[in-house]
Image (tube, rainbow, N blue to C red):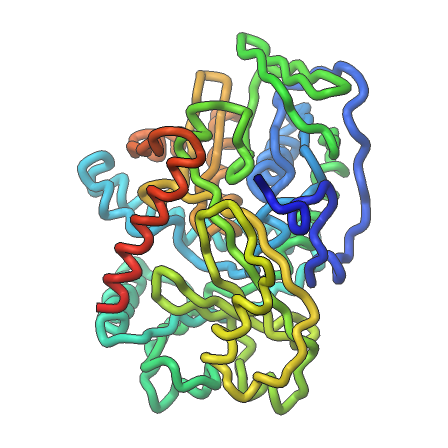
Length: 431
């Protein structure tokens, strides 16, 4: 059961909702409408699929159960980081060297897609380039060396630099780390404003967007019929982008993705002296643990600090009480700073930590399970799906070769199963 405190039918009381720049709302579906393509889900995947198809001249309807950007797309940490998943090399047997290389290249392409979208439609979402992976252990630094070597070998167009303990405080004002990998081709954004701005762009191009229009049944066929409580959409093609909230839409997709809670807090605006000590270059950062901390500054110089991934389906009684000790450990000199916002939501995780992009039927597409790489991976998924519908490429077939395990049993069994797996990986972090 989702907690109504963070899962009401409106946007949660987050920093993002309090600073939204786009206030357009959309009607609920009250009739039967027809389209060439119907998209389910008003997050990054759904909105960008609709937008890309509208750019190509398709007649598109988008259905959102609550509000545009209501799910993870409007709640996440705002980290725009290159890459799609957690190691394409694990799929070498299925994809071969060419397929692995294609996945890795698309991971670099994905960030550029977001930047191009922001520029083309002048979306006001506080885009800031600059990101740093942070190391707790020497093995993390060794991984950074390998990553930088690979980026250099493929001609990565942006500055990357490894820093040691002597340079660390030029990036982050904490003694918790031993070094990092700077990437000026990644960065951070205001995710809700990005989603809302993209939705406005899609609507301007003719996409019919319906909010508060939850799909309660799907009739598949040569023409698919989507049923809501008060209307229907008949469409030649269907794209399902429910991600962590796909339960009830399709049993196969539901069995392949597990909702996991992730949470954030936002401080009061920091003083100039404080923020220049905390993140002097205004970069987004992540550490390398399974139960990672991730944080960045907002445009008005608040510290947005996230983490606490859990698999119980229940929110903590107090997000602040649970998450702030993590922040205090990283930045003990901020213990007295007031927390103005606390919020959370569900991200979608698959067993192999690679986005799931493909088709259920020749005319039914899906995209889900971004496992924390959502901003860029969603845009790439939308691009690949739109390309295929428009008969521009077959890149979707690369993703379709990847085997995605199904979590056995129902939701009550899947959550403890994944939690046990995460505990194993956390133990590896420790030892």
